Image: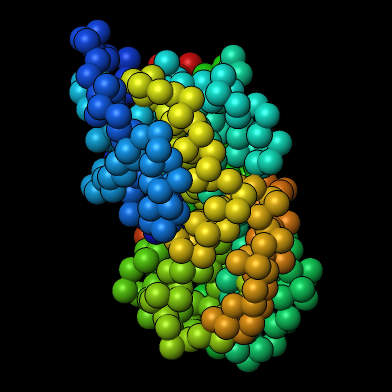
Length: 429
């Protein structure tokens, strides 16, 4: 199962747990052979829309006098294929993408990757968002991933539906008046009262995922201790359950046929998600062009997704590999990555580029960078352990059960019990 950015939004961390694979501790000590060494080539692995194809092609020309850059789009389960290749030490690419949701796993196996600080990243790091760089930084200060993009969250909403419901419609006013979860829930109740069958919440699990993502602590702390039973998680749980008890949750799967019907017909006029979710709305509800706007997410900014480029230890010329990565992900090329592949830059300097400051007709001409730019720079720094995704899965499963009628207290107890068991099997204290 391959996880696209779309899948990440749909499944949240629960879905990530479903594709968790073992770490690389079992790597063999066999002699390494690579697709890059001694051939005058530099292999680059990424996935569809993981980089701008035009920028990659330009990089081939840019570095043609030094190497033959050989990019490969790897389909299917990228994490699994990279893990297998690193473990076998056969045909390991010099440069590889790492999806943001997989970084905690690969960071735990940092010995497989070059420390980018040794090749010049420490002189560039200030150009990139601190919290994003921290995701790829080991406890002893090594940086194993060069940020490609991020997924700052915002609230996409249907202006026409909000108007009919008597809710504010101007993005600035929506951001100001629906800035808390309580205010957002009040609006959701009002919208449903005005137009029965209208839901501002996709499902309870989506709320839980958003609230956890807005905090500085998740399910496991830096000491590898389980903290999934502590107040910050319970508060997120209670808020998610509240969406169910208020009757404002559509109880539908994100990305499903019901989801598409809802955003098209206006019965699901609010999607709180990453900047790249706008592409999904645009692709699935093209006829609603001009009706959508973007406001700040209730409760504050968070982040979904966003990826990295890493250099493997098998790279024949790690300095050249780093120079290629630096060029592909420079602030100027980050703007091209945004234009060609909707990759929201991790470099704030890019936010003033024409590519990001132009109005978007799908959003009524709104400059969505005015929402996502500030959000990107306020995202809290949260520690994410390698086992975090697996440990979080029971909460989403149990919230689904709550929406099917299970007692919320019993579901919470069951989620805690299962999460602890999963953590213990992965060495969490």
